[in-house]
Length: 260
Length: 322
Image (tube, rainbow over all chains, first blue to last red; front, side, top):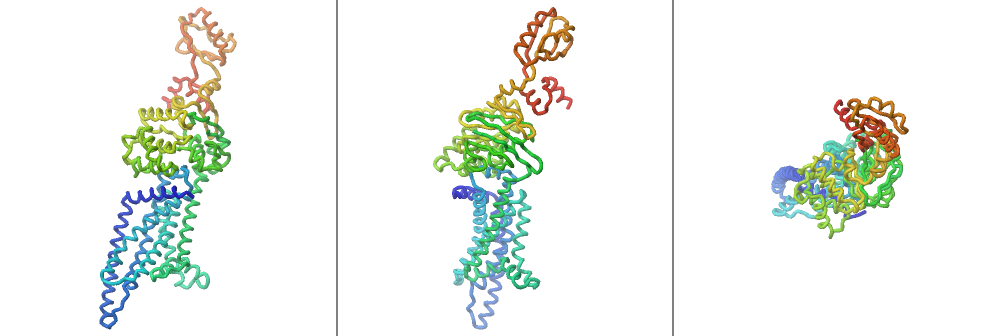
């Protein structure tokens, strides 16, 4: 694998993200929603805090009471953001025909896929990183525990890798950005809600465990608590790898395609 | 330099190309000629290692397209039909990106970009956004990106399609300037273009190669007959019947009255000489005898339709009636 080719693909994708409005608009909307969420959680916290103070205990944990639900909810927003940020990656190359330019350059398909993947992850994570202002804001009034904050951000980074990998596959199978977005909404939301089936108790035993394992929600919790468990790291990385492999196959299969 | 060996590509049950075999010598500009849908683009995409053939293989710049696709792509500059470019980028940043992808050494990138910008006449638009350029300029950017890594082989798919006449002349001039330093395969459905730019021609029809060689070879090999247009001072009513005595005459048609004829002959110079001598010995007063060469246009039509060649006037008449 040639790192230089990956770098050039990455660089091109980043420059498109940074020179077109979509990423900025998404970042602005995201921050507005985040601000509102933070505000409501703060209000709730303030009420609790007052009540606790009256009862004589003032020892409320800023990180667990505010940041944990806050960052957890924000991750949920990426179910909607990642498909929008990733839909262009391959579908647009296909629509414009520029994929032909890439695939006739001395670049391996793996390198194309990885360059785009890294750019997608980087851009989504940059948007998420903007939320760092909220812990910093708390720092003015209290002493947040940075351990869980850092591990929480790491967890979201891993989550984004899984999301972007899977969304790229959706983008690789169509030349329409809208179709790509719709398919990846479907995949991601399904991964999020698949765990619900265990509430209905239709599945039990090993099946329930498998479904529970596939479901994304449970894998993020530990990160917010400050625990980095390799089981969860492996989970997210294998989802990313699955997405990337499918993307690779869908892209490479073009060379064999049987329609003009 | 380019050697296609039995390339076949099926799209479903339909063969887009079948057993395509031809070669292009180093430093030559070869024209790949065929009507739309004949299989030009499919062949070129296979040579540029974008598609895999169903059967057969090819060698480009000494590398096999199936076993060493990366080496082939490194040695090849490819311009797809309707050059497909990133509309958001400026010409310069696009060329920098492509240079990076094609492995141009970092220290030479700036120099290569300046070189191709000059070579393709892009100085005036180098810092403009590609999406806002005219077709002619976009086409040139397409050629510039194919040249950026100075590849020995260039594969250009319909480089002049959709351009105005002035732009076409400029692009042709640009392609001609590549002769000798690069081996070029360019496709076209316009015969005139090929005669203007190319050293040799490969003709494809219905997915099969039906002729290849230099322009002269093609013209010579395919001429099934010679034509002689003659005019007499006086009416020559007897000519159609009497000229049949002369060996080698295939037929006669009267044109515009009894003093003008088109005589079709076997394609041998001796026959022509004999007929002219016979004609000048007649009493009708030969005032004009003109050899009519089959144009490449005639040959192309003959090849692609299986019909006998028609004269330019007939062709125009046919087109007018369509």
